[in-house]
Length: 221
Image 1 (tube, one colour):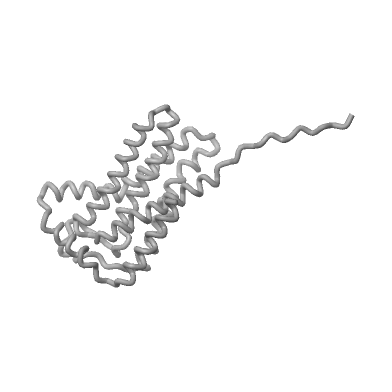
Image 2 (cartoon, one colour):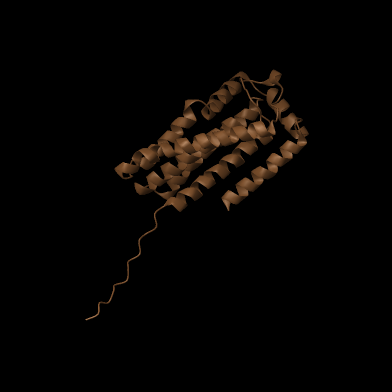
């Protein structure tokens, strides 16, 4: 359900953005203009710190941590593969997002209003997609590890909610810093949800099926 819903919503949004051309929707422009006029020093510094969680080493470290959490309880011959799988999945998602970004070619907001440096096209937001995917991978691996170690469901949900909140804040910071339109961020979230759901589906299909006991053969006397 999540897989179909996320990909369908992203496809519809991408078509709408592409057909609308280079100009943003009026409410998007108003949102970015409002953000540019409401950025006191402390808020700008905080937003810059938050937005940095969606690039450079942080998301890759989160994906690596997810792999290490899964690999620590795996057989020795599978540990290396499991440790790097989240990194490879994040990398593959980045390649997909880059192709979509260049294919749609939506311009960013005017550079005069940027509060941080930015490059490339606008849709879908790279920081948003990267942080949501990386923190989503970490939330899955951490929840699985905590469950094995006997932690309660409430604590696991709080950890997941904290990581999800970080991903949401990263996306919102891109609009607040005037380097993305709101629909760019929404597209990044939807693409990340679809990518994570696809990874979960592939993982389920690759799980070994339990062996069924063979019926005893009756030997003729």
